[in-house]
Amino acid sequence: MSALLFEAVVAGVLLGGVYGLVALGLNIIYGVLDIINFAHGAMMMMGMYLTFWLFRAWGIDPYLSIFIAGPVLFVFGAVVYRFLLDPMRGTALQNQFLVTLGLSLFLTNAAQAMFSPDFRVLQTSYAQEVVQIGPAFIPLTRIFTFLAALAATAVLLFIFQRTRLGRSIRAVAQQQDGAALCGIDVRHVYTLAFAIGSACVGVAGAAVTPFFYVSPTVGDVFNIASFVVVVLGGLGSMSGSLLGGLLLGVAVAIGAAILPGSFKEVLMFAIFLAVLLFKPTGLLGSKA
Amino acid sequence: MSSLLAVEDLQAGYGNLSVLHGISFELNAGEVGAMVGANGAGKSTTLRCLSGLLRPRAGTIIFAGEDISNLPAHRIVELGLVQVPEGRLLFPAMSVRENLMLGAFLPEPRKRMSQSMDAVLSYFPALREKLDLPAGSLSGGQQQMVAVGRALMSRPKLLVLDEPSLGIAPLLVREIFENIEKLAAGGLAILLIEQNIGNALSLSQRAWVIENGAIVMQGSGRELLDDPRIQAAYLGIQ
Image (cartoon, rainbow over all chains, first blue to last red; front, side, top):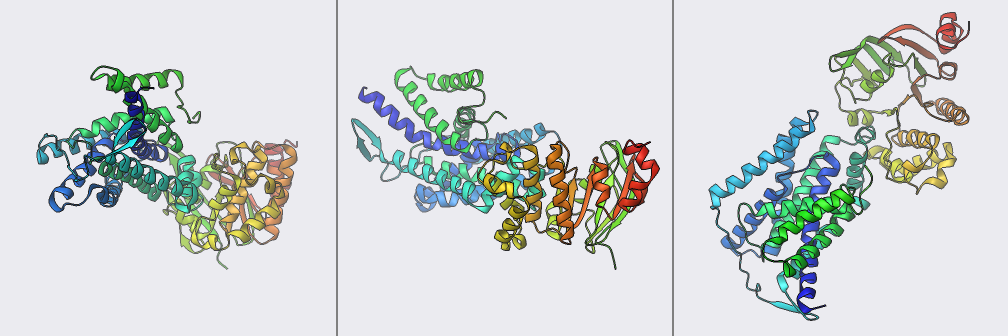
């Protein structure tokens, strides 16, 4: 394997961890609420701007901002659920995802009005540092970001599998009325699920700013990627999100290395279509 | 003594469809009550109102001295009215153990979780070796045991059973009714609806016949069993 290809694979795995976290957030929301959150990428953009401005104003390190952007997006998600989505509960499902689509447009355009459409780059003092892995040179920030995304994913998986809160969320996802009859406040769980899913993009948003440009429409990139990852890993499968994220990261990185220019996005959609055609339940998805 | 459950002029429906046209009945602590009637008469709708899954259109439901007519389902469980729903509504991908643990989700039942778990496993010893299997992989009868067990984990004052024998092998039906009798003998109040009318009536102190969303006959289970109209209409005795 040539050094170029090896570098692409490593870089792909590292970015794939972020795709995995973003997709996990989307998957949690879908699994519990049955809605696709079209504002997922726009909310990630919020996390990225928050991180950017915290760095610009007070020099707060972007990796430290994870602990700010995560909670801020958690609260934002809870508010969005309670005031925009919950009132739609019980009406046709498409009403809810139309609301998230509207929210996405609102957030993107608000960002354009406030911050201008310019691309911005957050330059940390360690942005140029590289680490040698085999024949490849990998930027240090990529590795930090991967570790942060992996840690956040691990924390979430632990919460879902091992805690009472996680058990109640899984219960609502599997059988809503059954959960209510166990004394679980279903509306509360819905709110929490949307908030946790939103916190995922808060964390991911903060974690990518050291090497990813910030712009009002940057969320689109991650929106598309997370849709592909969720389909690839399997709707509703949490471990599938991580696996799908890593696979997509690698596929896109290799594609970018050997295919000309903008074929990266073409490749993403090709994977999307191929999975839907040949394995619509995804790699780890159930038959539901 | 005031009754444990008092339903007064309960009306409910779905969309344009009106199902219950004013149902009233009472059940005391420690009693078994059975509601019988044909498919679509409104039995399940009545239970959905009791447990808060469906909001009544009119009427009141008083449970343990509190008006629960408009409370959300999880608050009603907290007060001690716990339903084993039709279709069981288990968490199919979770283990039997997790299903039972979720029954003790609320703070009070959680304190007594291991005690309750022992009690449930002594009622349903067959579940002991299934604890780590996904609930969805069990047979219908065993799933029904998990559903009843999950409800018992919530430490109910009133256990509400929606068609406990529906879709269960005949041998297991007997076992399920034996367990209901055991629970009742332990002093638990039970309200059940059944199409298996003979079994249900024979263990009930109170019984109601429901037709087209209204109670058309009531009495003790024995009285209804002996009533020629019931025998002709529901038991196939001429």
